[in-house]
Length: 406
Image 1 (cartoon, rainbow, N blue to C red):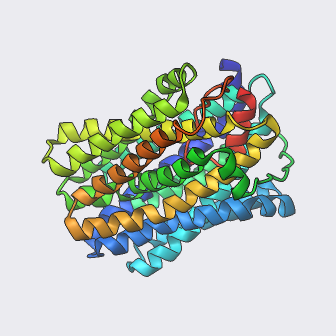
Image 2 (cartoon, one colour):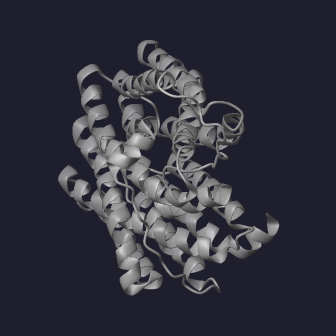
């Protein structure tokens, strides 16, 4: 692992700075939107827009890289991100923010594809799995660190918008000055959705549902916290707790999944999450209990994403895995677009409890569908190994991690 870190630290440092910048603005907009008098549904449209852009970027970025190369795409998208981040407090209008969030989502998607393909090229066959695992951990650490930065700043001013812009700009220095050649970029094939659904109905339905959960958790937590009367520091702690849960519980859940029918684990985790969300919806919990809810929410949502991909790959040949992961990520993105919009509508209709209610309903639906699928066919005789993955990763990194595990 030390050798891997010595070879890839410039890339990992750059990714961590990117995630700090992205994590700050993701939480900050929900808080600042409330200060500016945006309605809950208007803020939810802003949050949903990020995933619209991100989904578009996963489709268009690979072709951009093939045409003009990694360095030019990196520089162009990075400059655009930095510019947009400092424009948020200049154009205090939710429609302008929605357009800017689409741009931000598109650019970050392209940046992730560039960084991940570069990292994939830098590592050897023996170290690729370790390098990409370190990449996933660094992503989580960056978002957690971002919440600490948010808690010490003033969301009504300019500073917290300028700092992410600076961090994003600095992130490109270690990436672009790394003494490794720019990699070639191959085409990522996709399976048809009909074929993908026939192979893994639970994988397809589950990725769609968890996309909605992740987007609500990532995009609407700050909006919920503001509506619930939490302070900025408390909101930052809540968001940090969700990612801490994902970081801590990913490995033990992954180890457990390699020893049992993954559908049973998907059912159990979804049922626990649904029950937890129900309690959070109905009971007036103290803040310490809310932090425990956040740890469970993040600690279940992130492993579920990886479990669903691993479960789908249990029924695929190795040559189909990368193509299948691209299709599953697309479905996850579709669910992510709808997540903040529905959450915002529920919160406007019934109050802050709508945040937990929406995620609870999705978890309950996933638990019910997993239970039904277990009655339709037997578990695979020789399941593959679990691979810890991040919902922020592109299909390139997901495919590389999967291929390294099989």
